[in-house]
Image (tube, rainbow, N blue to C red; front, side, top):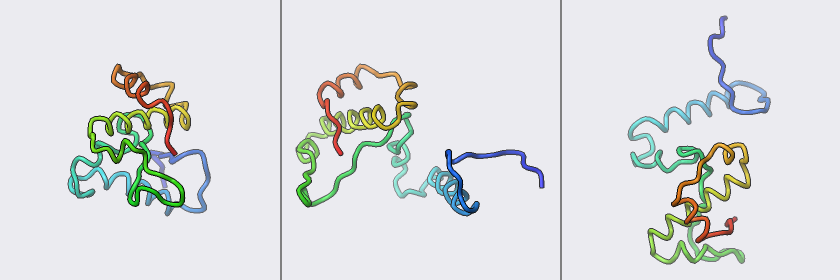
Length: 121
């Protein structure tokens, strides 16, 4: 057998190729039109712009002492978008300094970071 291409999923070892094949299949299939149900979904995925994704919340607004940030319950969609952007930026900065080092902040990014200076968990 001749190997003409290698693909790395990261710096780790798997027991077999099944999980790696599944990961590659998932990554490719989600790019097909209609695969996600909403054609705009891939545009908001992690890494489409080199940043990690913002935190996700659901109902109820409070669960086991943890609360959904007020901004997400406010109904102000523009402010929610800025919060999400700031969270994506902060998460990337904290968790993936390699990606952060390659990223160039826009004026809108800087504004979002000033408005929302802390990271949500």
